[in-house]
Amino acid sequence: MCQFWVNFLKRLLGMPDHLRLPDGVEFKRGIGLFHVHGHVKECFARYGPHLHPRCRNARRGESLKHLELAELYGSSARAMSWFHRQEYLDAHMADSNLGKKLIGMVLSIFRKWENAVEQAAESEEDFVSLCASVGQQKCDLWD
Image 1: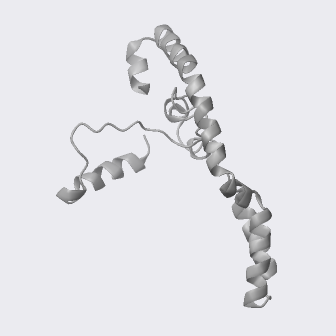
Image 2: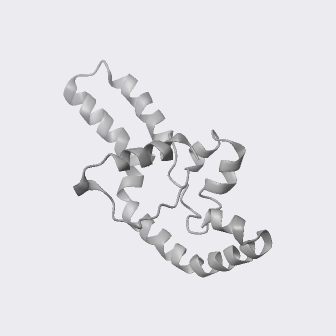
Image 3: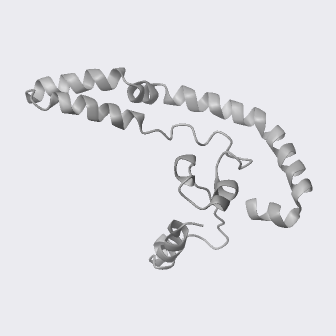
């Protein structure tokens, strides 16, 4: 696993008592699909969210597109007065994917939750089938 987890566990050990996690807390490790391609080949299958039985659609929203748009709009607004710049950026951000995403986020999350609940049983069956075909030892690495 990447150095994040090694350093994360070290940081947890150095925490004051009132910030420590309770005993028995178990982390399910994963790497976002945007970042997993920069890791070694084995990380893709072990930690990629697209293969984890409980995170099928976790990769949605991992996009830098809205940052590119903000850079494009920001460079045009440099020479504007403060008030004009604020209006200009507000108008563009409200119309951009980021603005639409923020406004529709609750409904989107609710729909995804309903979809996830419907697919949970199917995913569990697929995972059991996969474990039966690869063996319990390899399956325990994912669980």
